Length: 108
Image (cartoon, rainbow, N blue to C red; front, top):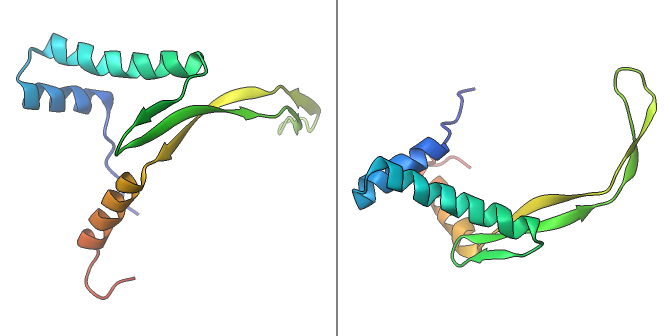
């Protein structure tokens, strides 16, 4: 099994740099600002909607009783909020059309 390539924040900065031809520092600021804005909005309980891409929001995870895998002791796991991403229909269609194009003929 081959490891899938990973797109990193540094790769995103390089892409902004390549497309906009802005200085590296400004490209870094753009990418950081986008991520910081998403994080701040989620912390404030807001929903972020990016048309054609998807939406980010938080979901409440109920508290539960878990087990310490090492000792087997019961542990109270508190309720918490988790970030959740829901892709748009367009994004799903793009991903699926890319898979269909890269799949070998006759493979399912």
